[in-house]
Length: 357
Image (cartoon, rainbow, N blue to C red; front, side):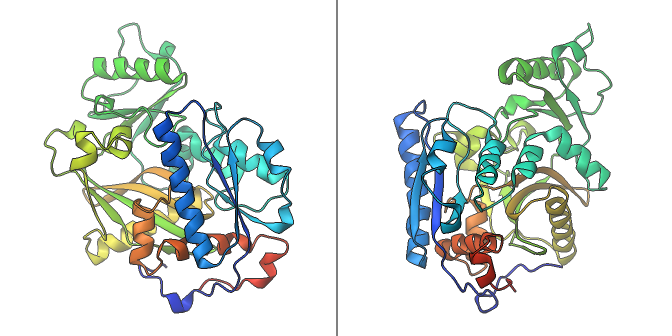
């Protein structure tokens, strides 16, 4: 079904096709944020070059992605899609992929349809439910009008619950206040999310259990990297036992410093098999391609998918890259593997690449 250890002698990377490294920098960001993003892109660029790939940088700093791409020929490159969004244009993740498709580029990661799907948590939940994959109980509130005059959300009685923006990712809008314990708290937080993020709110049953980040690689034949566990044992309050935006991106925050990562996670054989099966089912259900990370929680013997992240962050300090290294793929080889997975779809390079494993 899968493996937890990728053997280097089973991965044949026969070519080092040229890479067009596409990433974005937003002039509206703080200077420190711009520099951090630029350095992260450069680390991957250098790693790919050291592996043998010629790499050309393509930095998007305005809204004219089409104009930027017109400088390059699709037959000459594999595009490494490191582009998070078009500057100043929120929720444009899928538009980047759609533009690459329209101009005939072959690029890493999910296609535009899968990216658009993954951004809409309502559609993801519906798909998982239809596939019989365990997810928390959930409900979408598209506007404050869906709240009763008493400010009690309609037909929601399961607590604790968690409230998230339904159309954002990277834990945007997720704070310790997102976990609520009563109908009035829920109504208030739903209203806050709708007003602040100008979109619907997703309400879920809060699964207070062990959390795992599981990376899946491949197309067709899939491979599961060693799962990482997020250790929340430093916190007694369940409101703190979650991965918030602050815990991921603010080094000064308490959560950033006290949430520990265990890699590989300690699991029984049965738990490992169940987790692997759920991760593979979720990857396929979301039409992921090349790689993705799934956030999954365990409670009372059931693994629940919380989120599916196509084109997950693969900076060196992420659980995905660390799991790859644990599996025998240092950073450069991991990046090169993703390029070679992608190159099979390229009209020229694809004929020269053998199947992985």
